[in-house]
Image (cartoon, rainbow, N blue to C red; front, side):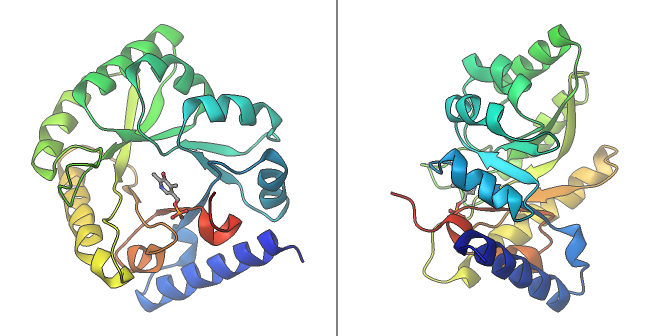
Length: 227
Ligand SMILES: *Cc1c(COP(=O)(O)O)cnc(C)c1O
């Protein structure tokens, strides 16, 4: 068994254990392998080990790597998206996690309508309010959601957040809980078949799963430390 294969097995076990602790079905949690900075050979190794969801944080890197992916892999944009990359992003990705302004949502909608497609998106929320983080504030979510109901090119699927870096995973819990509460409020306002909550990374994904994550975004626990 390769190291990547072993790491994926361990991550899946940890997700399952966290879900079980919270009385959830582990199958409700989608594992996205975040492959930024990871060469295509190792990405393909992860796919050979059963990964079916890949996440990138830069459009340009994705544009280089994605042509080498086998069919059927679900492609996630997890990083900040500049408006001038919206058109390319629509072609490359299946789900954009990082809608963080009305202007970006407008641009994606316009481009999606031009292309005759509907793009699945999440709204990125800066729950912790750290000035260095992308994402709209929790107070702005409702207004953005309301605006987006008139965007036929976008299908809102849920919310995404990045918890602050802490010494202990447990410190992330209040932020994940807040995202879930925001999501539940949103669900009462707009009709979502299923509310997606994209939260949890290498250092805190078990806490995120306990708090209701439906998508976890994992890089280092699968591929090792980044350069
Ligand atoms: C890099 C990245 C991840 C994965 O981070 P790890 O700590 O390596 O698991 C998840 N989400 C986003 C938005 C990222 O940029």
